[in-house]
Length: 129
Image (cartoon, rainbow, N blue to C red):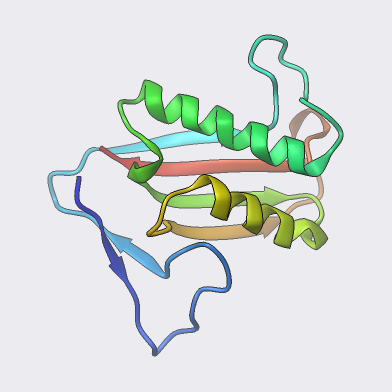
């Protein structure tokens, strides 16, 4: 799968590890992943009350679903991050930059009042395989 990163100086530059847009060839198969929170797969319990630990576990869970769908982290074209505390935005950005390969996918970040099971972070993705 070949994805093309779209960038224009006529819109604001990315303020984190993401691209303004991603373009795909017509033959790409899109897979829409449900949101993942920081649950440990074996127990169904949050990995920790620590925000960073929840972000890392959420990305690990997302990677497992992507692999089950026949893809890799390179196949992500769009992410949506949900944070219960936007003061943690820089932490989520840093972990995303460590976890995902470049070029980064398109991304939106949303501040929310609450998430399932008391999670502080959730990530959902669209991949193209």
